[in-house]
Amino acid sequence: MNCRVLVVHNAYQQLGGEDRVVASEIELLRAHGHAVETYARSNDEVVGMSPMTLARHTLWSGRTARELAALIVRFRPDVIHAHNTFPLISPALYWAAARAGVPVVQTLHNFRLMCLNALFLREGRVCEDCIGHAPWRGVTRACYRGSRQASAALAGMLALHRGLGTYRNKVARYIALNDFCRNKFIEGGLPAERVVVKPNFVDFDTPGLGLRSGLLFVGRLSMEKGVATLAEAMRRLPDEVLRVVGDGPEANLLDDVRGVIRLGSQPGNMVRQEMAHALALVVPSIWYENFPRTIVEAFAAGLPVIASRIGALADIVTDRKTGLLFNPADPADFAEKMAWASAHPQEMAEMGRNARAQYEMAFSPEVNYRRLIDIYEEARAERPL
Image (cartoon, rainbow, N blue to C red; front, side, top):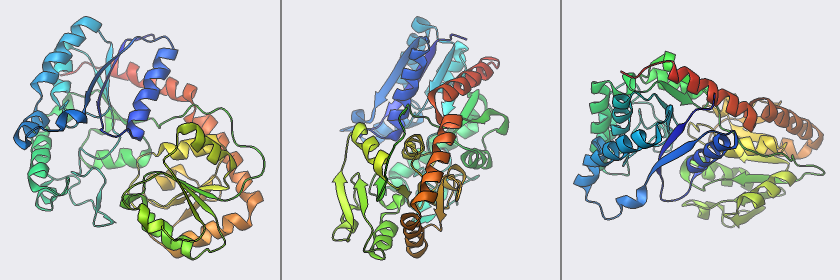
């Protein structure tokens, strides 16, 4: 099938993993001869916008409805593939598509439809209080940006469109990134028959070769990424070396920790060089990661992963086969696994080979492309209500 695809995305002010996924999928589709058009809004538009105006756009964007209707007429897409629609694109997208008779595929990059902060995380711990319920607790706790007003606007949008049946009837297929997330979305009320699984992918053809040594962290240095656990675990391992790529609000927790080498933010080619030479990638997250691209990149590089045994991470990383798992927020267990990895380089090398094989089987561009086209076919077989 050589279908015409309209990709819709509300971009973030700072480039993140989700934005890179969108760009990669567009490139993949075009490389296979598909006509791809994009409709994009940016959170840069929010700067200077009044809270009342932003709340109105979050509930329903008239601009999105008008512009998408015109674009659909001009481009004549066979399918619309939406990524992030919050806050400026809004659920108006789904209704504009339905009126034009174009099926929508929605990738679920986070848990925003069920949790106001999109993380299922509160005060440093997993919180599922709003799953399957109206998110009023999130409003009273100011879970979105620490603001009850902003939280109320988001909760109002979710309540309105749940009531209208937008999420139930206007999306032909939802893409979850793994089985764990799929189950959470279904638990939160999405129709099980419309939630399918397609993981992220990376185009990375050259796995790391030769001698590997040292540990590697790649990502944002923020609370949900388990930086405090990482710092405390490294204090227990004075002879280990950890190279850290990335920056963020908790970067200071790694100051003066022996063995930690801060590299700051680095371009993709430098990250891949680091992955080609490290012994293991460490992922100490304390929240339900959906599907970190860093893990896919690590697998592509033949790099095993030491990760928290939490959420989807416990499904993506197979303990003692493609990496090691440790108890989340447990620096003693984390330190023990890192020490074991350093003491067993041959076993880690074998896990790295397994990780590369897993990449080739499940996370390569061609495998991902075939799965994506199958999902588009399924969506086109249904007509939006």
